[in-house]
Length: 314
Image (cartoon, rainbow, N blue to C red; front, side, top):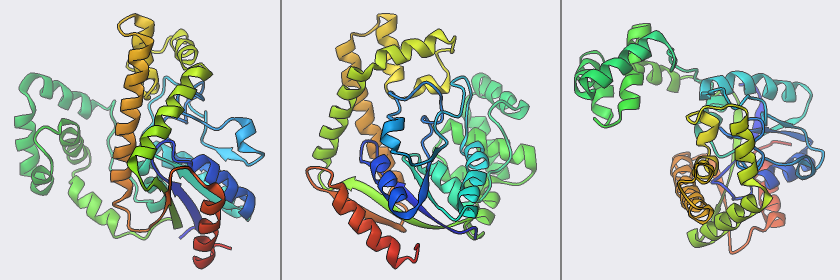
């Protein structure tokens, strides 16, 4: 394994950025963002990326490194982030991986590698053309012949994963089931100590998310979306699918009012937080710190210090 690192995970608005900065200052660390939207330039408000003042002198990586027109996958993120983590370790400092995109964090920690295949590849294009012409049933049947376990596991309506499983088999000759099984048997790339933040009462999380959305709007969310559009981004660009951007496109197009967009952003943010928690709760290694009514960072830092000390981080 490549060394010990700390992972700070949790749903949106739970305080990952603040805790990771406090830990970095205490443990001579550097923060590596694991957020699938914070990688894009020009999206500080919509992604709640830390400002220079909020970073408080702590080095941050993987924030605003990609053009908004680009599409990034977990595999590409890991390819870029792993050398950064290794560099932090070589300098004798503590890497702190912080973010809410669980798949991306796992990609760095586990080091499983990803099955071959790409969204814009020729095989994917052919499969998508067949999906449009024939529907998903023949493709699922084809997958059943090649990889019965995957066909059984996937819901017939999950077109995206059905295409992906077929693509892997057609491109490599190896089933995605076999690939995943082999990957699970490999040791992780790093020894990670996981810290998770969440609210004891979901109503408090919802209230905080709503306040954060109001702050984003006040900070100029609409102007940020206007600026992104002025760069000539297509409406289906991945960056514009970020919660906040997508809804405020409707305001600019005149299809919804600002009040309607704000309500939708709050709803989507709450739904996203729920999905993030569902993903993270599958990880038995996470040491959960529960917020009460308000976020008490002094208490969270003390609990984190005890956990890291017990794990022999420093």
